[in-house]
Image (cartoon, rainbow, N blue to C red; front, top):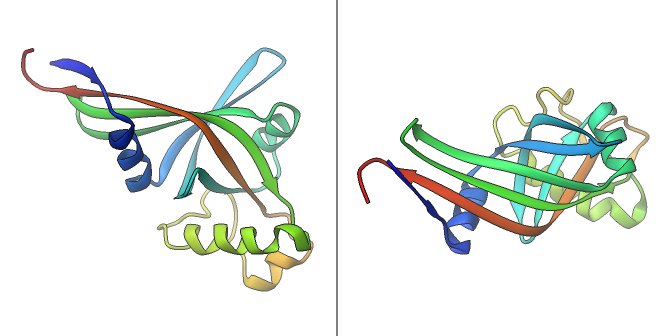
Length: 151
């Protein structure tokens, strides 16, 4: 097996094809990582959550990382790490169109609302819903790929 650096285009392909990431955030020098469903559009990864620890932590420190993997076997895989900034999409008129965009992308993913909560209906998106839509504005993306065989 050997491991190689992936090109930016290869990294973008893994991110575009995926829907599950591990989201890492940090507060008071303590890291926290959770699985999360995402949808990719442009330079943003859109996500959904209910209020809780990760939202509290990202509000206090918006610097986050996401790890996205394609796994064929323990000797053949791709892993991309994205660093970026958390940006909440509040239920305000100014974010209405982007929230609808996030929801329209996420709803195409199987079980996208799990474990975040129940699937919202359009009226809840513009109302006082506890559902939180957010995006990660991607700053940097790097990747590695493992292949079976010898160099």
